[in-house]
Length: 196
Image (tube, rainbow, N blue to C red; front, top):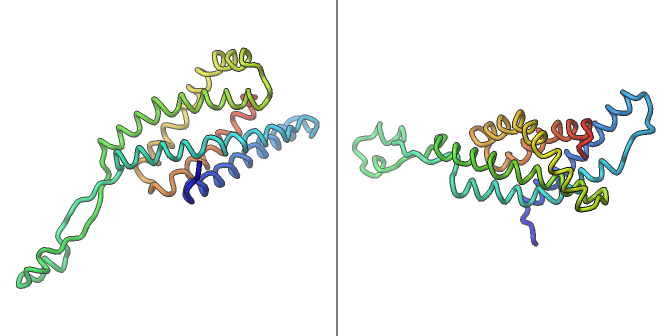
């Protein structure tokens, strides 16, 4: 699959930030234990690989949602020049294109993201992390059964707010960065709670 420049940039940003989350979590663990004996560089590497794998499809998903239901839709207003010069019909026909938040589209995207993307990403996390630690399919399935709901519910304490902020305020080109920055702290949470 050939990735476009924006997907590649988003993947690099997410990968670096998720790697940093692993480093931070390992640093916190070492500080708590007053020892570097339990530092797991493999855990950091798993976060990096996970990010590299899931960022492109997540970016494309968000791109699809934005294309299908744009957050901001144009409104046409007469320009200040056209109001002041009533003699010129050409100037009267000029308009300035502005946009506004489309609440319906934003709500649709928010609901789809939280009801489809969140559960899929939770399963993907548990599956990929299990696979990267060479767990059997039976063990991975057990992890999904045991950890899916607690992880999804914990995620719903964070991600709806991030998602709503992203969809309503942040321009599309910066949404992945905002999400990845929030993911930095989420990754620390997951690492510290041994969900990796």
